[in-house]
Image (cartoon, rainbow, N blue to C red):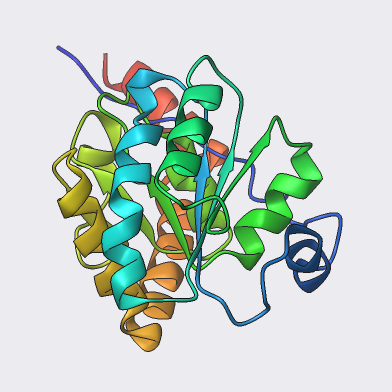
Length: 209
């Protein structure tokens, strides 16, 4: 009695408004440093604090790692203060609200996109990362638990800092596999998460009734 039609994404909106190296330079990130990106509201549901607590463990494996949080919310100041208290201010950047073109550039220049949500209705950020051919690390809560193919388009783990850290580290440790995951994600959005595909699924449901 129920057909599920997932959200889609506009595949034409994928070009950043500036060069990735230029943006990295603006943020004080070297061109070859691994970059983990969080995009979303800085609220409890989205788990930015879980990702922050994962940083030290990832840092042990990758001393040049950088983390960028793009988004605004009531936890931004708290998480930023925690980062400072943990001595991670030089590792973690908090950008607040970011213009769309700049967001696209952040996706393009990142190595991994992390969605550490405690609960996630769908997870549009996953599709945005795949549109940029980037591997994702997500929790297994809600939408990402259904749409991420573990080990193929990204890694999905419990909503725990250690699990997130291990999943991020495993992707960063194998560049060829990370690129393969990103390509698989791009194929996924092209074949199963475009708005054209979503429209076809809705029409198919009407025709089947």
